[in-house]
Length: 263
View 1: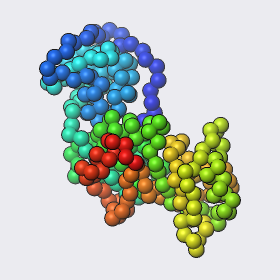
View 2: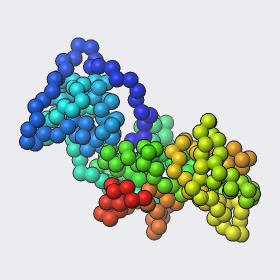
View 3: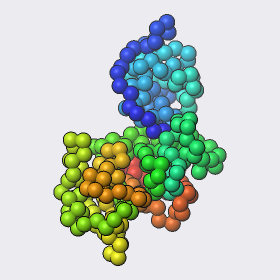
View 4: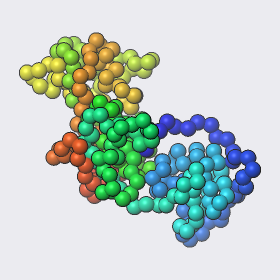
């Protein structure tokens, strides 16, 4: 589920009892880990919603980090019952005009519409692709892995096929590699080259930056307009043999690769 990160750590809401720590023992699991396993968010973000007083255990608000629960405890987030689901990992070749966010009431089509009821677990996109951007998108209910893949320090590689409104000067490819300033941050491409030797308006670009709309903004800064943008590689995953609008479950090998950070 795509969302902005919450800030501030207020205590429990007024007039609600607060549970103090539960002792350790067999069959207990840390509350933040339980929340992440349920698919709500990463463990790091789970700590924040716990401290904001948005989690209840057996009807009582919990704000203590490190709190532990049993498998049969009733854990709720904003009154919604949570359960530790089986982990699911899906790769999708996103078509144009589908939004990546799952909680936009104004969206006509979301990427989850492409999956429908064929996946019984509740998954959410890892990161975001613009409505008009196509290509590789990962969906999962593994909050821990999603947190790692979206955090800048893990530097997951992304490769885009960019279609521009005019031929790109060779010097501008060098500019991408040397770095371009966007909002006070120097964005450096790891690689940039012509994607088609016969059509210099098509460029392949590899980068790690997680800035919003970063590829479009890089080319706009050099005087180009992106007509079409396709992500062909994300964190070791490609869209090979996956038609536009189709999806599949990741193999065990691919899952292990992601968890080990081999990308």
